Image (cartoon, rainbow, N blue to C red):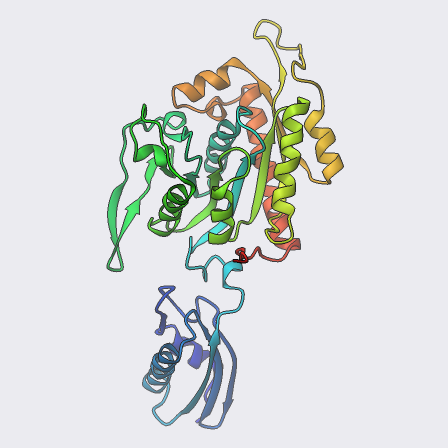
Length: 367
């Protein structure tokens, strides 16, 4: 009797990778299937290449092939560890199933980074993408206010026998913020190690499910949080927010350089100029460049990264953020159009990044 590769692969859909919770074929972990008479050989990758794990996987593979194809088959399995698991969202142990992990950063505080993050998240959700948001700005968490979920508390959910945090949902976005775990008026005074532990819990101990985009609102500047993040997850790319004035641009340059360091090596998708110009409500055709003109555009040209968007300085942006209804929801307004354009550019750059740049690896810091 002649046997076929399709029969072998069908049998292996019944073998589950224990850490990744999906079958070997769906995860694309089977290769080099060879059939010679009643002899079958194949290569399989697994997440835990320890000897006992290899033995259990080998037994499961042989059992299912002989059970579902033929008990007369002699099966040889070559098992190795997964290569480049961080680059494939289905193979990651941290944020499995999240296609794009994007950090939103700023060199200094007060440039509207969190406002841009909230509106970008909703802009992506408007386009039909599944979006998650981690408010990693430990010392100034603002997402519960901006997304109108003050006072809400994450619940727990059982996932494969583990109790995990279930993110709060707002406007269709899954959200976790340290603001959910502390009183709104309480000052969060933590040492770096405590802050890093809190961040790790929002990644490792939460059930995020399948997402197209995970946005991470980082604290301003560079800190332990940034190092924790790049050691924990393979960030697809970074978006750096700045205002046009020189003092902000100097810090934005440092932010771009941080991600470009050899040991970190996170692609910068581009820069966003916030508070780009002021347009009075009574003079909608006028633009006043209060903080300077083309500052971020010039920096983007110098650093050879794209300018993703120019967001005007408009009172409604502040007002909408304060009441928990981000400005991108104000359809047809100049502000909404600006955020929609930013969103489209981020989506385009993320797609370009995956097509042209090798997957990001988590950072292995030297002791």
